[in-house]
Length: 151
Ligand SMILES: O=c1ccn([C@@H]2O[C@H](COP(=O)(O)OP(=O)(O)O[C@H]3O[C@H](CO)[C@H](O)[C@H](O)[C@H]3O)[C@@H](O)[C@H]2O)c(=O)[nH]1
Image (cartoon, rainbow, N blue to C red):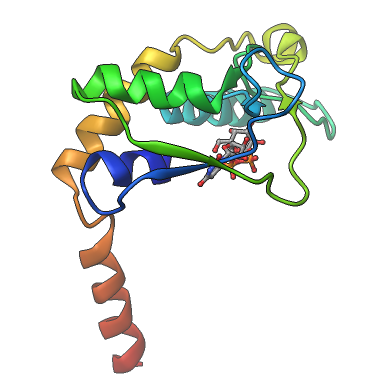
């Protein structure tokens, strides 16, 4: 998502799509893209659950339970920006799996948590953030450097 957004804002020329020959619907890698607000809410719910009593140590997957391909993401960002996103399919990235998405059942049972936002929300909000912050967190990085050099 960050690379695609940077192409949309003109900081990169095009997206290199890592692999177009996976055994997925369109041949590109499939992942479970979760909206940052859903992810944050899941962590808040987990903290509240811990504060509410003894639950021990549990691993909980937070995700939508749905997989979207790299091309779905590229097309979604094209819709959000109103302009097609240029891309080239290149070789596979070593270590990537074809498809990876989570089973969020436990999160719902244990925390009452469920992802509420979809790919369109991810694309629309990511684009809005990118337009408002074309250099990413640039100024904060500079501030961090100043703080470091003062210490
Ligand atoms: O320039 C790039 C960068 C990534 N990808 C592809 O995009 C997908 C996501 O790649 P990332 O490096 O962003 O993320 P991971 O593969 O590490 O996946 C993790 O981050 C994803 C979001 O970026 C999802 O949240 C996913 O569930 C989580 O495991 C992969 O198919 C990858 O091959 C490209 O094609 N080109």
